[in-house]
Amino acid sequence: MNDFTEDVFDERKIKKAIRKGKKKTIITIVSVSLIVFVVLNILNFAISVYFSQKTFKKWDAYTRLSTPNGYISETVDSRGFLGGVGNYKVAKNMKIKSVVIEQKQYQFGLIPSVLISRGSGGGIGVTGEDWQVSYKENGWKEMMFFHPNVKYKKYKNDKDLIQRMQGDKIYEVALSLDKPYKPNELPFTELSEVTWFWINTYTNSEIKTFQKEAKENDWSSAFIRERDALGFSTNSSYTSTADLDDDYDRFLRLLRTSISSEHNKVYSTFKDKKIEDIEILGVVVYGTKDQIFKMMKEPSIKAASLGGIVDNY
Figure 1 (tube, rainbow, N blue to C red):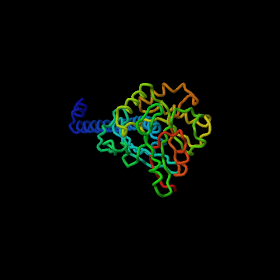
Figure 2: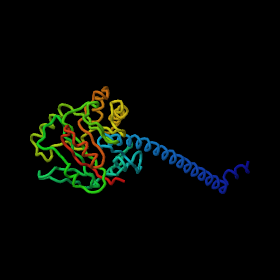
Figure 3: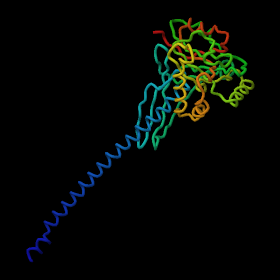
Figure 4: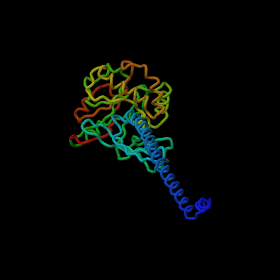
C-alpha cells in the first residue's frame, strides 16, 4: 500500500508523464495543422484552377467574337485565396503569322482579387478634322465599320493610304457592304484564305440609335467601332454556306459562352437561326496590296478601313 502511494505521488514520474502528454499534444496539433494546411491548399488550388479555366473560356469567347481573328494566345495566373488574377495576351491571326496586339487581365474565383489598373488611351481627330481612330495599347489600329441601313455623312476609305505604303506587306482591311447579304449572295467571287464575317446582330432599337448618331453627331465619330462588331472567322476560301456551317456553329457556342451578357442575348436570338438566315454586313480580309485592291473594286463596297499591317514573310 505504501509502495503504491509513493509511486503515484513520485514527482519525477509526474513530470515525465506531463512532458510526454505535452509532446503528444504538440505532435497531434502539428500533424492536424499540416493535414489541414495541405488539404486547404489542395482545395484552394482545385477551386482556383476550376474558376480560372471557366473564366478563361468566357474571356476567350468574348475576344474571338469582338476582335476580328483575335484570340487569347497566352495566360499567366496569379492565384490567391479561392481566386486570383489572370494576365493574358490577345493575338490576331494575320494570315501568315499571329501578332500580339494587347495585354489584359481578368479576375476569377469565389473571392476574386482586387484589380487596380492605371493607364491612358488615345485617338486622333478629336476636333472633328479627322476620323476619331482608336488604338490598342501597342499602337495597333482598330478598324471602323459602317452599317448598310444607316446613312452616314462620310465613309472611311483607306485605299489611298494603302496605295502609298511601301514594301511587301499583308494588310488587314474591314470592308463594309452597301446592304445586308445572305451568305450565298455575297458579291465576291473569291475571298482571302482567312476571312472574318461581320454579322448583323443588331436590334431595330440599336439601328435607330446608329441612325440618330450619324445624323446628329460629327462625321468623324459616326461609325461602329471594332469591339462593337460581332462576327466569326473562316480559314478556308469561302464558296458556299456549307463551308461556313461549322464556323457558324462555333460562333453560336462562343455567344453562349462569352463573359458579355450582350453576347448571351444575341445567342438567345440566333440559336434557332440557320446559316442561310443570317445577314452579313461586311468582311475583314487579309492580303497583299494587289489582293486587297481586287476585292475593293466591287461596287458593293461602301467603306474600307485599314487595321493592322505585317511584313509578308
